[in-house]
Every structure is written in structure tokens, then in C-alpha cells.
Image (cartoon, rainbow, N blue to C red; front, top):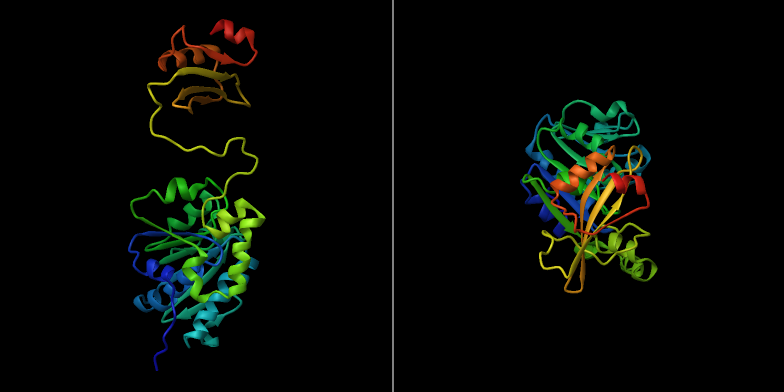
Length: 299
């Protein structure tokens, strides 16, 4: 007897992904974790035999309270759960001759492990780059990642999402409305009035902003304009502990443009002078530096 399982739009997007890596960034209760688990159980486990599916989170308590709870709920709802196949001591489950193993990284010896067929990293922004590398290089087929974007910059943005073999899926609670109680939706939307950053992350599924920033209304651009009203340079001297920094500042059309030209430790005055020449600065260019007369005189 067949049993139909209800799925969300997030499930369908993951279902259609054929890339090596599938990154799910989303708000709270967008259904990203549940959808990936449904995909692994209801599709991937029926396509593979003698495969190993590794499901990872940073700590075992959070793994048990979140992913494992939903995993076994999906199995039971689909009439696929068999207690004899559930090894509660080893945190594994056998399904269609495939092994599902639940691994936490608070046990260092578990981090590298043996090779696996498919990997799912839940709340991947809890991991560091080394954690990810050790897991990914031992994965033969697909890697699924999900997270709430609570930090503005991290290894996921810099090194994973830009890859050509990566599909990026962004979702919010609105993609999962069919399955959410009204009270849950109300609480999420209440974040608009509680904290702007919480609303960005847990309501809109957007990267969080670092608190305490002096400037927040800025964006990146490809080139520094050539028709600036004025251009000056700012320099901060450093050496071993703090880097020497040089920034180019220009005003164009009412907008301020900044370009970081130097940010290096261990630079001598001779090194700095060489850098300035290579960057094309002239004696007539105005450079505002911190108060170190000896360094200024030598340069």
C-alpha cells in the first residue's frame, strides 16, 4: 500500500538539484532541513544500495534534538520505520540496505571518518572550514548544506557557493506556509518589531549584519571611479602585531568610494615606500598618516 507524503517547494528545488553541492540558506522554519531529510529518505535511499549517508551537526545534543527527531518522524509517517534496524547506541539506521549515520563533531575522532556516499551538514555555519574539508573530501556523491545565515561572511560564501558545481537555494518561512501553524508565523513576523538583524536572518533568510558597524549603508563596486571630485589616501602604520594599512578615498557624485590598497604585517619603511611607488602614488598625492614622524620622514 502506497502512502503519499506532502512536500514543500523547498523539497522540489532540492529534488531537481543535480550538482555535487547543494546549499540551502534560509529563514527559521523554511523547511530546508526537513526537505533535505525527506529527499534522502524518500528518493536517495531508493536509488542507492550499500551506500552510506552521513548526517552531521556540531554537537550530539543538538543533532538529537533537531535532525534525528525529524528523521525518525519522516520514517514513521512513511511507514518505513523498523526498530530492529535502528541502532540507538551507534546512532545509525539501516534503510533499503543503506546506512544512515548521525555524527557530531564534538567527538574529534569522528570528524574524518571513513568514506561516504552522501553528506548532509545541518547548520553548517556552526562548523569551520577545516571541519568542512575533512568531511567533503571523503564524500563520493552529493553534499547538502543548510544553515540560517547568522554571520555576514564565512567560508560558505567565499569558498562553497561560488563553485560551478554548487546550487544555491534560498528560502523563507513563506515557502513553508502550508505546514506552519498560524502562531509560529505570527512569532516569526513579530521579529520585525523586536530586532532588525533577527528579522533579516530568521525572517528573510538573509545574511546577518555585524552589530556595532559604524557604516551600514554601503555596497561593493567593481572599479574605483576615475572622475572623482577629490582623492586622498589614509595610512595607518603597523608592523608585527598590527598591519600597515593604506586606503584610497574618493568623492564622486555625492558618494564616497574606498579602496584598500595595503593591509600587510611586517612592512618596513623601505617596503612601504616601494609599495607606494608600485601603486603609482606621486609626491603630489595627499596621504594622511598617523603621527609617526620618523616613518613619515624616511618614506
